[in-house]
Image (cartoon, rainbow, N blue to C red):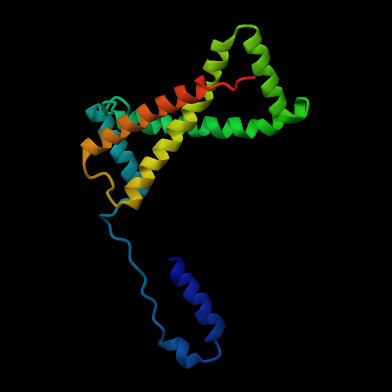
Length: 183
């Protein structure tokens, strides 16, 4: 329909001076057929049929069993939004703090350690580092599927790389969270 309108406007604009050319142009107009339903009718029929059969809307969480790849995909998306939000808050926090966020964080850490709250700092570091490492390692996992052209051909490899990414994220998180500069 849109193509017909576009060609009609082009034809009338550029070919109107030559009546011989415009008379030879034929427009093929598709005639609606009686057995074709509108999109809304098709959706209504589908919804009524599913309601009559007692089917839930798909994809529905109760239809699928939770798997590690599904859970990792959901966590990766949740962590990515959390990381973006945290990094976007840093300049806002810097505006309302003393103006030197790095020194504020360092003094907060030193004060917490002097008060004997090393476990709280460790938990805070883990809360920041695990989503970061998890997201980075899953990104490398997806990148390797593309770069090595392996894709997801073997479900065993999918699970192995998933478990490896989780384990490596935990190890890197604990290692970096336990690290503390000697003062």
